[in-house]
Image 1: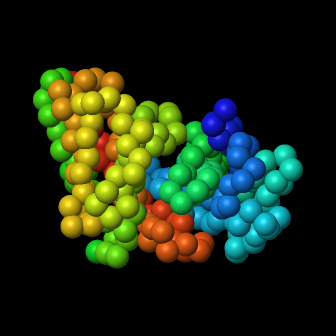
Image 2: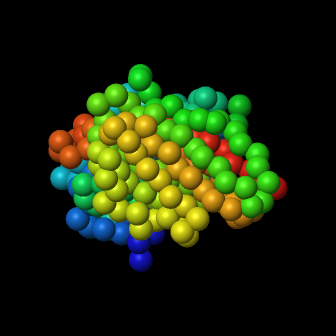
Image 3: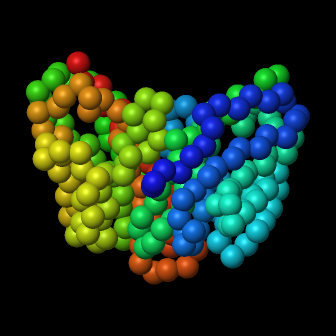
Length: 110
Length: 118
């Protein structure tokens, strides 16, 4: 199918690491993205990874890509209450075609 | 402009009325996208513009939905004879378009227009 799948909810304690997982479907996707959506706002790009990379690190964020299993993950180190939001993964299948997951709602407990 | 601007931010309308939603993309972005986000759902692709043309309208849910873009800039999404199932947040995004490279593929989103049909 065409779906990009994510678990719906994740709850972590402040200071712990969060890992948000995503399974995509098209092995020819060139780029994969993570977006963050805070309440009442649009989607904000967090990071992206090119399909020939296995890992990308950007401050507290680490993206891991397993092309064989079509699995993408986002790890947030030292999670803070301000990280509470919905996180979307997306794959880019061509010039303009982006397929988004259903989003994972991250709740950070103080 | 500095970001993608959408208006109105909130719209409440009665069933059967027509509504227009506006998107002003980032200056210089040739590609423009409309998505719909229903409560608890992911993003549903509606339409994509490259310049003023719309190569892909496949996501428009019915013939009550239409969109246009003029001057390669502002876009309007029109929903005629609104139904309650049209209630959602309508998100607009823009990107550099066909120039290629990682930068060209990044979508920048507006804050959305929340439509409520009573």
